[in-house]
Image (cartoon, rainbow, N blue to C red):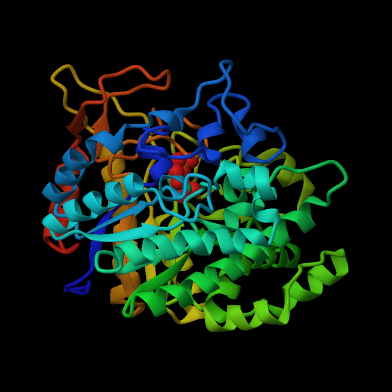
Amino acid sequence: MALPENFLWGGATAANQCEGAYNEGGRGLSTVDVIPYGPDRFPVMRGEMKMLDCDAAHSYPAHQAIDMYHHYKEDIKLFAEMGFKCYRLSIAWTRILPNGDDDTPNEEGLAFYDSLFDECRKYGIEPLVTICHFDTPIALIKKYGGWKDRRMIDAYLKYCAAIFARYKGKVKYWLTFNEINMLLHLPFMGAGILFEPGEDPAEVKYRAAHYEIVASAKAVRLAHEMMPGAMVGCMLAAGQFYPRTCSPADVWAALEADRDNYFFIDAQARGAYPVWAKKRMEKAGIRLDCTPEDEADMQAGTVDFISFSYYSSRCVTTDKELLAKESAAGNAVFESVRNPYLKTSDWGWAIDPEGLRTTMNSLYDRYQKPLFIVENGLGANDAVEPDGSIHDGYRIEYMRAHIRELIKAVDEDGLPVLGYTMWGPIDLVSASTGEMKKRYGFIYVDKDNAGNGTLARSRKDSFYWYKQVIATNGADLGD
Ligand code: BGP
């Protein structure tokens, strides 16, 4: 058998994209609750447009999402029916500490996840918990300016201490921050950052990044102290950068783009910043506020494994003509040009299964730590047939091709891989666009972009396909 027997097959979600119930159970407001649907979404996510509360002129997809807060038993039962070994979810920081740094955790919030983890255990599903998935408490943004301020480290650790103490017997696998590198691209979503006039955006972002990196390192140590045997990972929005041409300038540009992306993981996995970053910041006049104590903390809190999301590779060039002609509008988060060898998804994301193997090998060559693919999937338009069935062969095709490359990475390249939790086993709100119709699920949820629908769940063709993949540990990909 190509994959290890205990390989953790499953799916991944995030609290803000599926739970809803944003003002129930004593929960406080967080960034994701005030990120609207529509044209203001990206300006708010980038920290260019101030929105610290909700208003009547906007709609906010996270408020209801797919209401998993009230449907989790039904949803986990469906995951179990597919044979999930693992379910990656995030805890909403403000369900536990509504103001972000309360001295006493909110019992109702704690009890909710207790019950959710018990439900997982009932079916033998291992939970994998993201401690912070794009949700900075609004109260801490008002108090400190979000991750711009060092005091966020203590608030985060307070939150970690509360959940580690409560769930130590129930959760073994933890991730400190979802797609930590996203902070550089969507600073409000990643770190609660709003830019003030006169601030140097690069300095603000890298200082915040430093505080998150220190917080992550301290959380790793705390987890190991409080929960012997716990496995704590970092989480990167991965995807190898390719040079668009073989001109040496393009090769260098691709290397630099990869380095920028790996900056966080270099620090989290090796316990120190890479030399190039120190030099680059010095020349750019960026002061990091890195104390000798921070350096010691980073050194002492390296992660146990490297987790990442992979949707596509990226392509860069320095050629101005190519740049103008081929700018890949598809992914509004990462700047890149179109790769002429690849097809794209309905949302313009390049589809590159072989890039997954390349990315995995790059990560392992760099860090020599076990890998965990914690997001991969296809956001697509699905059509419901008159009889209620959903024929999503395109999703099966995408996933099959990626899983095949994952198997090669294990079987032919010998990489240690802990598991594969695809993104969005159940349809949920898109992080980038806020849409419902950008669907990833094996399970369809009856809800549209305008918020209409019964929220009923139903199985797509891919549901049965994935069940077979898990049952055969990847041996039968249904070709
Ligand atoms: C990652 C996020 C997820 C998820 C996924 C798909 O960036 O960690 O939260 O949403 O991408 O992206 P989208 O929802 O924008 O299609």
